Amino acid sequence: MDGMTVIVDTREQTPFEFSRGVAVVRRKLDTGDYSLLGLEADVAIERKSLGDLVKTLIHAKKRFAAELERMQAIRYRAVVVEASVEDVMAHRYRGEAHPRSVLALCNAAFVRYQVPVLFWGSRPHSRYMLENLLTRIWARRR
Image 1 (tube, rainbow, N blue to C red):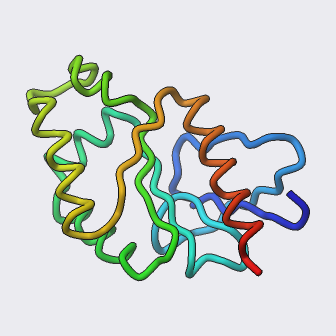
Image 2: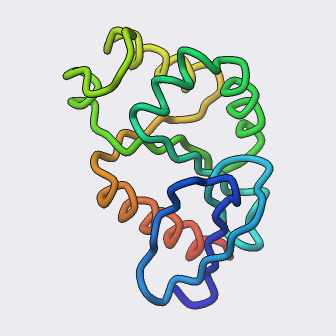
């Protein structure tokens, strides 16, 4: 999209590769893994693999809660998971956390912090959905 530049946090270990023509810069973000240049105060998207989500929910609760708390001040915010609810229910992750507990913690994050946890399926589907979302936010910026 004309003029849109996606910011990818420098700490993002496996960044998405966006479509040709989408400008991308790597820069430290205070909140989230993805934002838009010029809209950093309005856009924060955190990306998680399923394994990382489960590990974070169980073993890094305080750090994750602090991230979600910061996200509350941001208009367009979400946690994007590279997995489906079916993947969670089928326990396609390491660890003893029960699938219903994982999903309940995701819903608790939404209820407490108003940050939705979006299960967008595979990595390619998640990349597509994120690019589409960022494009729509960019188009509405006026």
